[in-house]
Image 1 (cartoon, rainbow, N blue to C red):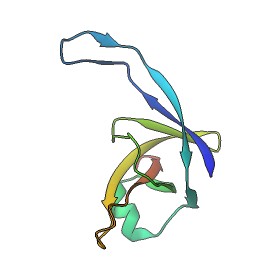
Image 2 (image 1 turned 90 degrees about the horizontal axis):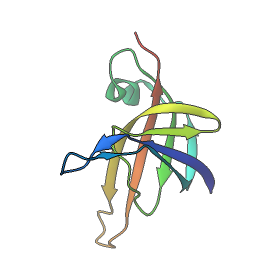
Image 3 (image 1 turned 45 degrees about the vertical axis):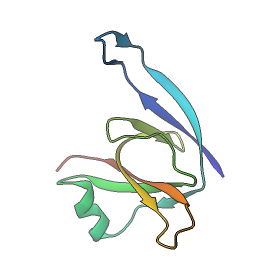
Image 4 (image 1 turned 180 degrees about the horizontal axis):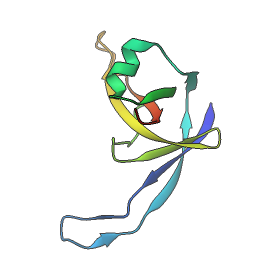
Length: 101
């Protein structure tokens, strides 16, 4: 397991009140170094996947959050998955990207 930090906010709640920014530590199951071109295309034009972070069970992350992994803060492309075998397992895969083309 590896400790990473989720950065969220500030934002507004459903009543229009400002919710302050919050940093929350999360335990990742694994951190994989940058990945191939298939995933890079998924990340978007001009962005480079620096690492992929895996969580099991699933965690509360959105594409609007940022994640600090090994001392570097990244923009995210979050994917949620569920086991195809009917086990009820679910998890979160996060592409951590940086750079502009």
